[in-house]
Image (tube, rainbow, N blue to C red):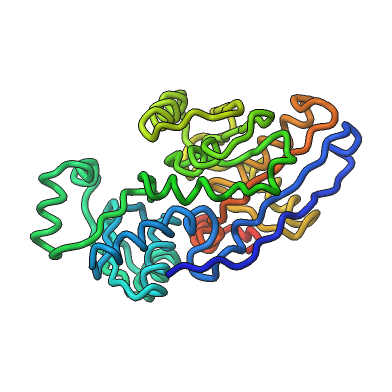
Length: 304
C-alpha cells in the first residue's frame, strides 16, 4: 500500500522572527510520498487499506478540476493497484489542465457532472445511481475526510513534535486540522488558517470535533481572515509573498492552502501575536501539483 518516505522538519531562520525571540520550523509533508504527497498521504492511507480488506478493486471520489485530492487519489490508486473514478464538478474542458491530465494518465476515469448534480454527492440516491453506472466501488468523500482519514492525519504529529508551542496548518475540508487537534498536547496551540471565505468554518470545525469525538488537549484556533478572497482566490500580495518565501528558503508553496497559511503566520509574527520563546511548527500540507495548473490558468510563474 502507501509507504512513507522520511520527511524533514526544517528550521527557518530570518531576523523577522528571530528578533522577537521566536523560532520557526516547517514539517515537510510534501516530501512524504512520490505519488500521494502531503496531507493526502495520511487521508488515503487507511482508506486504501480498508478498500483492500473489503475486496474492492475500484476507488471513487469527488473533486473540482484542480483538486489535489483527485490527483492524489489517482496516483495512490495506480500505485496500490486499484482502478479509480473521479466525479468532477463542472463540464469537461479540453485540453485537460495539468491536474486532470495527470489523473487521467494515472488511469483515473473522469466523469463530469454539473454543479447542481454535484451538490447531491452525499445523497443515497445519487450514490446508488453511480453504482448502477459504474458498478461496485469504495467511496472516498470529497477532500478525503472521513473517520479513516482522521485516523491517518492524527499521525502527522509525532512525539518529536511535542516540543513546539504552536502548530500552524491550512484548512480545506478540515480533516487535517481535526487530526492535528486529536494529537495536540495540552501546552500547544493549534492555529488553522481557512482557505475558504466565511465564518461558517468555525462551526464546521466544531461540528467535526464533535462528530469524530475529538477533545483536544491543547487550544484550537480557527482564523478566517487569510483567505485572500476565498477558495482558489489570490492577489498580488500573496503571489509576491510566495516568490519571496521561495527565494529565502527554497521551499515552494501553493497559492490555495499552504501559501496562505504561511503568509498568515508571518503576519501574526509581525503583529507580535506569538509570545517570546515561542517555537512554531508550520505544517506543509503539499498541494504542489496544483501550481502547474495555476500557472497555466493565470499566466504566472510561481516556483515549483
